[in-house]
Structures are given as C-alpha cells and as structure tokens.
Amino acid sequence: MTLTLSVHPKLSLKKPTKANPLPHLVFFADSEGTLLGNVADDHAKRAEQLIAKSGFKGELGAAVSDHALDTDGVSITVMGAGKLDKLAGNIQKLGKATYKTLKNQRSAAICWGDVICQKHFSQFVLALLNANYRFDRHFSKKSDADALQTVQLINTKDSLADYEAALALTEATFKGQSFARDLANEAPNVLNPSTLAKEAKKLAKAYGDKLEVSVLGEKEMTKLGMGCFMSVSQGSDQEGKLIVIEYFGKTKKTKKAKLASPIALVGKGITFDTGGISLKPGAGMDEMKFDMGGAAAMLGATKAICEAGIEIDLVTVIAAAENMPSGKATRPGDIVTAMNGTSVEILNTDAEGRLVLCDALCYVQDNYQPRTIIDAATLTGACVIALGSVRSAVYSNDEDTLFALEAAGEYTNDLLWQMPLDDDYAAQLKSNFADLQNIGGREGGSITAACFLKHFIKEGQAWAHLDIAGTASLSGADKGATGRPVPMLVQFLKSQAV
Image (cartoon, rainbow, N blue to C red; front, side, top):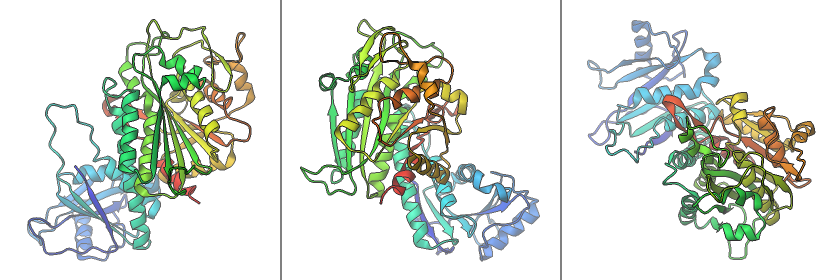
C-alpha cells in the first residue's frame, strides 16, 4: 500500500465525507506529562485533559486514546515522547511506535507544532514510512493491509517551504531505501547477478532522461584483466556482471556527454555467498543472500537521487557475482592478478568481497575521474563484532570525504564510526608468493580488509570504504534487510551537489 503524507502549518478539520473522514489526531507528551508543540487548538486542550484524567506518564512509545464517542467525532491519541532531553535520540523509535498506534486508522494528523526541526522531522517521517514497509511477495496469502492511508504532519517551527522540501527528500529516500530492502530480501534463487543487471536497466527506463546503464559480462571483464573478480565468479553457473550506471544530474545527457568529476558509488553485490571452497558453516547460511547489501544500498541511493532530482553527477558501479563451490571454483593457495596488475594470493575463498571490489575500484578510476569514491560492502564478520548493528564502519584517506559522510550520518541518524588505516595493519597482508594475500589473520579483520582495498586506490584519489556487515540486515525476529546506509548516502550526495 502507499502511505500519502502532506505537511501543514496549522490544523484544519474540514467537514467529513465518506471519502475523506475526520483524521485521528496525534499529540505528544513528555515524561513529565507536559503536552508538546504549543498547538493552539481546542483539541490540544482535550489532549491535556486526557493526560490529566488518565494519569498518563508519557513513557517513550506509550499511548493513550480518546475516541470521542460523546464529543465531536474527532478521536485523539497522545503519544509518549519520553524525556525531552532524549527526544533527538529517540525520534526514530517514536516514529515507529506512532505508526504502530495509528495503523488501524484510515487517516491521521500528527501535531508536532514547534517541537522538532527539519532534521528530526525527516528522521521521524522516514521511521514512520519504514514501519509501513512489507516484503510479502512470496506468501501464498497476503496479510491484510493496514488501514492507514493518509497522514497530515502539522509543523510550525520552520517555514512550510522548508518542511515541504524536507518531506520530498525523505519520501525519495524512502523509495530508494525500500528498493534496496526489496533487492536484499529477495530469495537468492530469484535474485542473481543477471537479475541485478535487469533491475538496473529498469531504473534506466524509469529515469531515462538522466540515466545510462551498461553491463559488462565475464568475457569483457576477463579481457580487461579482472582476475580477482573472476576468481570469485568462476565457481558459479551464474555469470558475474559489472553494472555501471551513469546519472547525469548536472551534466546534460547527450550521446557524447561524459560525466565531469562524478562522485562514484561502488557496491559489493555477492548475491549469495557459500564461502566457496572455504565453505561456511550451515547455521545461518540462508542470511548470505544479504551479502549484496552494499550493491542494494548503492542502487537504492541511485534511485533516491533520481527521485529527488539532485543536481550532481554520479557513477554507480555494482560488482555482482555468486560465490559457489564447484570444480571450477578458486582454491585456497591460488594466485590471481587484479586489473591494475597486483598479484593476490587467495588464502581463504570466503574473503571474496574484497576481490570483486578491488577490480571494480580499478575500473571506476580507469574510466572516470571521480572527485571521491565511496564503496559499501557487507565485508567482514569482524566489523559486526566491533560495532554490532548500531554504526557502520567508515575508513577513509580523505578528511573532507570523511567529515561529510559523518555529518550525513549524524543528520539522518544512520550512524558511522571512523576506523584506522595504519600501515602497520597493512603489513598483515604480506604474502610469501604474491604482492598481497587476501586475508590478514584474525586480528583487526575489518581493518586489514579495508587496507586491502586501499592498495587499489591511486595516489591522490579521495576514497572512503563503508563496512556495513552489521547494519545492512538484522537477524532473529526482525530478520531482513534494513536498507542502510541509503539515508546517509542520500544526505551525503545532497551535501555534495555544488
């Protein structure tokens, strides 16, 4: 279902009709029982009375409702926002809780008044929309859709135009994030490298005036010398693909047009990772369909940028392959050569993401002149141990890129944590038989993986690597793709549109 949102400077209730019933009103109260927002309205007085009569404590995510059976037909809910000094950090949790409370209402008006700025407004709205996300295409019987169809957002802290712009960008971000989640949640017998290429071509059809898509197969990649990529792909019956998407957001698209100093997004697209000959344990292997979370995020960010119409030149490169064991699969001890001539001794075939990425990084540098490169990959279990599912790891050789990514993460609450790139870690990649080995041992596993990628970045090229192994998907009862770090990437790209 589609949830339609609009933003308004004041609450205005029109005479209800069958097609447009009165909205369910939502107010917020802090842990002191104080109504938030300075909303000057008779219904706000009702909300205050409801708080007083019910003894509502305003705990985060709690709710108390008055369905107006004896009044004017307008029902209201007061949502608990918790401690006011913690509101900024809890705004996404509150958005999710608000949707859960409202999902059985047909329409709603959420009265924030002057409480939240555009930053927290955007976080709240994105959480509200994400709570509406479903991936149910494979169920034989679909669950009933939620009743909620329209939401008015009443905000007065900043100008209406500012909120409308924030809402438009948030809705574009949600479309991109949902696209990323759909791709990553898809079953691996349905989604393979060729399917990813088809999805990219669908984007080109949808946004043809801005996008150009090309796809390299294994013959082309072999000819280009992408031995590292092919060492991963060769074990599968599914052909590997290098998918290249050019977004002409600033440069006018013509037959001869070339992107001028684009930002480059590079995504790891291992559509299923068995580990290859270095086979993974069976427990939890089904979640290896999420190993293309980096590719999904980059495709999602690209879709969001198209939706928002951000004026920036962008090239997105997806390294799509399936890592399978077979008679053709790479063995531990094999030595292969990357596109830039670096020889790599493969000690563990389960450290495959860095192998497809290194050739993709070489390709984007040889064919474009990017002002910065951002790669994203569900690269290492070590990153999950280090940072869990709260923050993604960021490694960078460029302070401007690093600071801009961190600022975007703070703005969207899609958080990052800077990790080191010391040369002493890179020493763990020394091989007795080749220029590099593809693993550096148990110590600092996420760091040595980043150091491996750094080897393929040319001198003077700005670059950042995002290890999203802990944030791209969740396990347990909430198993599924999160679509991170699409929100952060969209905000970052918007900040770079100069």
